[in-house]
Image (cartoon, rainbow, N blue to C red; front, top):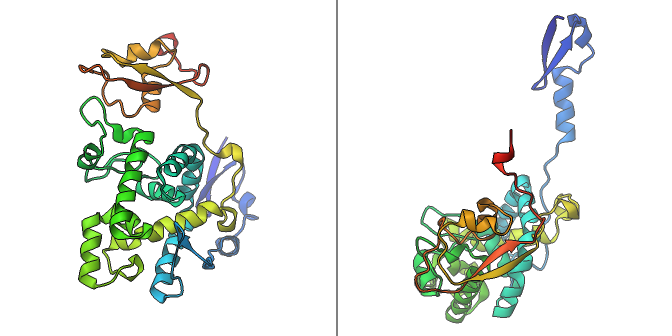
Length: 313
């Protein structure tokens, strides 16, 4: 059978055993272009009223504040794939973060700081910051996290959230507002304090800061607004489309572990799944010469059904 391929609006249509007349009814390039223009629209976004961060109002009536907020709303609304992923991940991880922030006395809005820092993943920055909260090694150790070749607790979501909360509370005490504390998470307490003194102003919205820190709080505000009102910004999903928490339990380990691959098999899982639940375990083994007690998370039986490669013929 003779095949003909015809390019229509960027797609290849294969016509089997037919002459060229068979595609004459296909829409012309001009008609197809008009249809595409009519079907796809990009809208300016209305500015939300009464914006606030951690109960502190945003002076949206100021022209520069309006434009900076508008930019972040547009960027995050129309970067659809990324924001939809954030919505999916939030369903899995916010229930872990939220109660810790509440226990530590930190406003709930700071969960969106983790969103913009890492996309709710165990990211690694070029500067070496790690985990959901992008904690530097020196800061992690200062706040009591264990960081070495075997263990890096910056990847432990519960422990790193408590460290971030502690850091933010100290920033709020030093700088006087939660908004400035959020900015200082990016620029450092000293950096923000220095600019306040140099520019002789007190509030974040009055400061002229570098590109990254100048956008930082507005990015948090934009994600807060969109993730709280996904329908308003065109995000459509069902509850079953969101990522779910995996039922699990924890066991205590206070000895060395020579081989985590073999250790995992005792619980009917493999090494990959063990590491998914315990990303803070950085090696295939655990030295633990001091017999420190660790809590290792394991999934409930039956959640995963790993394939044994040896059984594949």
